Image (cartoon, rainbow, N blue to C red; front, side, top):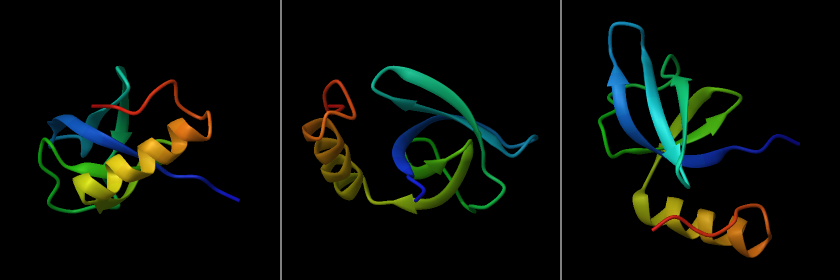
Length: 78
């Protein structure tokens, strides 16, 4: 089973089709090759360094709260 986790886009490098996302203070560079029309502030589902799709902010927050409840995150992002 694969797990994708939502993270917020904090910067975009359009020249290289990459973005930096943040989750609980951790920042990671990811590929945007599979998703179009990404802007700063969007939430993306991330799996092994690739954005798989966009997700609504409220749905991302609900998912992150469930991950925190299950002990998979220290605490849900605010």
